[in-house]
Image (tube, rainbow, N blue to C red):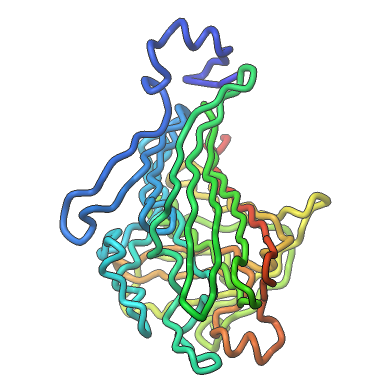
Length: 344
């Protein structure tokens, strides 16, 4: 049964009230028209629960704006979601195209700090967020009285004499549901092994993030990235008002998996009256990065399931922690973002 507007409905009941499901929910394909965003394809999704979000098809199938019952969930940067033609891969140039949004993909062969690894110059966070999807497919499917809503596509990162990785990505929700689910399969189509570095960069903003918000997770190990984060370690789970001159703090979390291999962390927002949960399968995502940025304008919390640290690929290689994918091998990643109203 689909729960809509405070009531539960069967498929046949819903179809007696509406002429087309798009009256309530569905996927609409659009194109951006203004400024540096011009030309970007967008799949705009409504679940019927009050959850809506934009899938940026030309930006690695990232998620841009997202709302729940009119309340914004994601942080949006002043850069906007620029067309990938404007990508600056060198050094920190990635930041000139970092629009924030509900989820920004980092990868596929590098993520984290700019680096040089085996003679290859690597910019911040890799290329994934600037790779357009192909073979895009959208749809709605009834199974009994449940209706799933999805977008599928393939994102390819390839270089002559280099890597050839194919990411098959499915983003889904359900009629009357309040979740966004990523189901990714990455396959190495090259004839040699390739580094595989992935970060699901979830960016949450005001009013979900405020001085009254806080994080909740099962007891686990939390490490500061550097001395700046170490000074705020005792307060990793709480926030403050926008602060001039704030230096970002980054924490590395080793969350605890449940009996099915999943783990999660909750952001509680009394001001928004909502709880946002980031949940992921730990089989191929073994850590969570917390990006705590309390600056004026850049006021954002990053909750980032990852299979790597942030120091750069050469450091991962030297430490023996660099993840690799063999020729013909496939690896699966599952991440879910959900939201619900707080109970009194």
